[in-house]
Length: 301
Length: 301
Image (cartoon, rainbow over all chains, first blue to last red; front, side):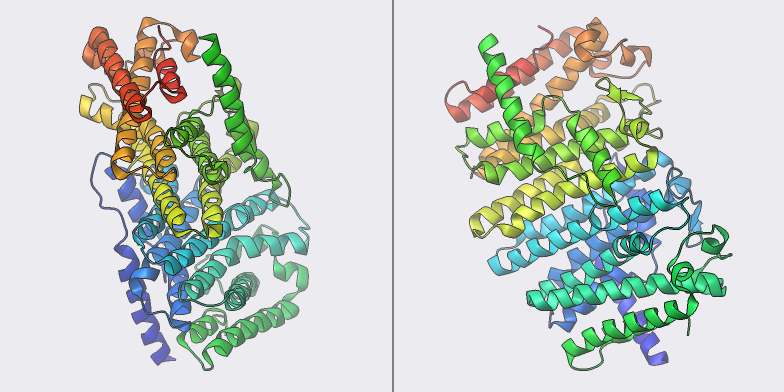
């Protein structure tokens, strides 16, 4: 396990070193928005989405870091903007994230809105810059498909769609399971699906393989979310970085409140095993990506 | 003049008919965000940016409406999202726009934030969808360049950058002319530049021609802004749709307050003439695009 942790730390560092080169320079009259964008981008954790993307790219034999890096940076920018806007007073109204002031508390609300817009726009600016320079038709086609996947999974049929429904359900009791699964699939799983799909696609995977990675990503996202709900009930709040079981307190409908603890734990385990099996079946052996998946969705063990 | 007005009305209708086909269907669990996006998109005026794009495309001999239409829709989505976020309480805090409730007043603040995010994301989703289906390398290269231009002109080095600096200067007196020009160039001119450049580029114009259209767009944007400032002073508020000379009341620094009315009027005229000359020099004759330009920047005559 310590060997895996050492490898993980190295990969997390490699990932961050790759993506940070795309950050805007903090200069010019609009300097404040660059400072605000970078403040939130730099306060991230394990960079799971770009890490998943990089390892999926490698799983399918990809070796050109210059090709995958702008997409890795872009998905982290999308993730970061979504957190900035999520924290706004009109949304979750949070003052802290990962122990640091949220963007609108560190800067101000208007700047936080524009920094979020700026990061979402900059994600596509970064990808478009790379596409604009690409001279190989096959590679450009793959990049266009990858960019389409990112925009779809991040948008109103993906992540934003999940946020909208989550907001609508906030003060409702008895949310149907179907609705809850829609929220988790869109809000949590969509960007993980995009990470795994884009990595595979840019390495030249077939449509069937990309679909398999989408399924793995969906499983990982859902397992991750169920685990969060389980930890919220069983009270292991420290691992969640929470001081209280917030879902339970709010009487929020969760996967566990609908299905019970036992079935939730079994479902979470089965989703995880299936995801790991998909990944291992492609490599024909255990890989860092499957070990990473296992480590993430068995945090409670 | 009436002939021009009839032509304009036809072109405005043609433009809207082309771009409205890209709007999301108001269905699904996240229906509310689609309603919110469409509410603001549908309450637009003359659709100047997609109209400029279409006419620039035609100026350079473009005839494939299927190629240009997704880019026309995308730039209108970007423009619409910027208005939704601009109107938010933390920004300009406006209750009405073009006589209708602003998005956050019609829906709520959280929905307006997400609808804005949704439109910005959907702009690139729309372009990416088209690129993902394109099988001709030359066309795909042009689309990638066009998408890059849109993202650059809309982002933190373009429109968003201008909004940031405009916010920073809001309560400052004696804003330097250089800063004021940066705001106008980014906030007002950048999307007009993008419209004219993308139209030219997708029709196969050379780099030099695209640069000329950028210059024309910059002139039009700046002339438009100076005219706004002039009308704000001379009191022809009806044409601006304002009930009071708001800049004057706020003692805001404007092009006119720095340069005086006479020089401002001369500059506005020269910028307009230069833009029209660029457009006419390409066509070798007067075109709808140059007539449109003239009609827009001589509203005060």
